[in-house]
Length: 507
Image (cartoon, rainbow, N blue to C red; front, side):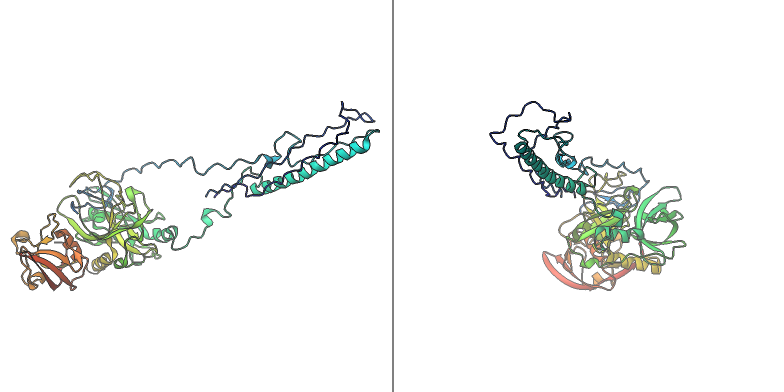
């Protein structure tokens, strides 16, 4: 904030009184006795400069992962691993218009304007001179009055000069400076800066490299004090089957790591640091079910390899059905995602999405992109304000299963559904994968009376518009949960309750 001189006006100097009419007109200067010339009086301004005014500045296509460099699927670009890392884009030059130049110093602040020896703030000092022998009474009175007027003007100008000099500390500027530097400011825990200061040290940049040397970069965060790091499956995929995996903290310390377990369908993975430090601070996990549209969000990650980047936004939508692909067309992930407009880019994958208090509410996984290049494309695109995160309630359950058994557990209804784009619901297929039955005998769907050709339109209160939407919604639940299915058969709507079954592993 810059403030010009804050309303300390210089009082106007009184004008000299008019000279009496009968005063003889001055002639050429007459040297007084002793030969010393009389110093002429300087002209008196009619008023002092005025004080300056105040100037206060005051789902149609399957998305690819949010992985930097991963092959991109249609519609969604992945935000996770840079494949490979590209050079960071040069930053833009600072705006030359900020900070603004200091306001001009008022003319009177440094002695003012009429020339040396006659400016405001310099009281006039008359040289001693002998008085004339004739007419010295009235002439002396006039001179005394003029000197008094100048002295009064000098006091007013001097006062303004002193105040101006005190305000700008002899710098020629009236900009007001903070008493402390930015590093000394105490930031509240609820501010973005406060949240970032606490959360960034518990995030890592993950580098995964395959046995052939290919790989990329993603993000993860500390899950517990034992050295477990949660991230996306597609971030660590290159390091599976004998590859190399490292995790680097913001302080520059790098640790080798190994994959504890990964869930391709959930797009969640857990890695563990080898010889982890003893001072690990896990991030606090929030409750993604209680998140509301409009809540503030903070994303931390390594977009395009730029580690420890913090961006902000809001929750734009909840329960957004997202089907993301690894680019091969064979490995798809399904989620009922949190949508955010916080800037998420390739390299952000696996990083935490935080609420305003710094609690993890999601794992950044995918972005909608305008230039993903189609299914299997290799181009990378940046954020357009449509990012998607796996809700932390789901990710927490998956991570705990991976730590416990090394394998994911999926909830299921026991029926195969069409994965084609649709708007009317999820249609149970006429035949399952590998010529198996579409409705598993003895499974939850069969027990509930569902048949091939039925179209599921709702699961509990959530509208189902396609097969991927149904899968993503089922996977937000745990095996054994009871749900209500609404379906259509022969043009009529039916409702049935069923208990979700379970499937272990990705196969």
